[in-house]
Length: 419
Ligand code: DSN
Picture (cartoon, rainbow, N blue to C red):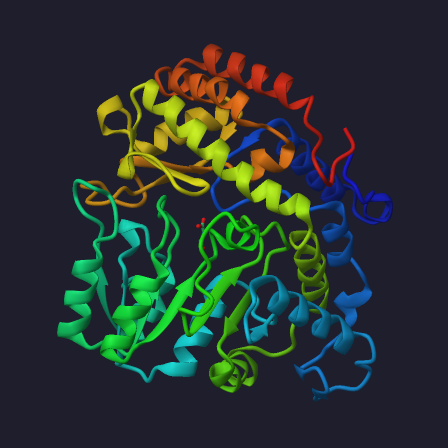
């Protein structure tokens, strides 16, 4: 059963309540390995489901356009202060609705239409909002891209420097959605400084690892840091922008009134709770275990003949080229889902196939680590994955694996679900 309970929802709208209960059960029974997902705590769920939903708060604490902010001001201030303390930043804006609006706000703060910026191309591990041609950021601004090495699968900082020197971008993005290796923030900062660009670190995927001291921090190197709050950071669906003090006014003005109206106070409260949780010693242990698990899984998958982009991982994320397995990413992802192992099909660098039917899969260990799985379980996870990918049309095998996954997960409680 879902926790907090859905008593009132079940009475008012049994159809919807049943769907939510179904999703809770699904999340409990599956090995959730979508690299950008996690399980939030029951405390975060409670904070997000409060009367804070009822309140408009356009503006910022102490300067609002609506009355009645006696508590919302304190809640937002708490979230800001916790973000600043956890990451050690001078400024934090906790109002952006999610990662894409957060990045858009950064463009609004620093760029004019047609201005040039440098980023990792989406198909190489970047993000839609880092200048993909289908994104407003690719239509309204002029992206130039760096890539990863064809053989190494890693960002080539000499190439980044060469492009930056030739193109003189106004902004440089580092970070993305499918980067299994440590981001060298000092090197990016040196390049940005040399060409007079604003350095933006999009740490959406690794924010929790940074907060837990398991990945180097961009603080002190990047001018601006954007992050979602719901991936390794294990908070609600939302985002934050952190920045050096000199950029605070530009960022705040871009978020409100530049792009958004009222902040979602219930989400702000959930973010405040998640930041408090992330400041505890147990979260440090969690962040390190995420990486231990990812490395153990990488080693075990390599043993099963999987081809990992860059040869492994430094963080929570694995990107796998399935070409050598003779299976495309999408049928593999669907077979794995049927086998109780949830991940996403994904392009790999230099993929000859298209994003809707790419050559690879992407997975991460943030959620299964929240459930309590350790490196001891990773050889079994890899064995299930190898068997499922080798049996994409064999429903009986996939069903059997799904049952084994369910059996294993019975021993690992899920926040938000009481069984
Ligand atoms: N869609 C997110 C991810 O899965 O990485 C990024 O926005």
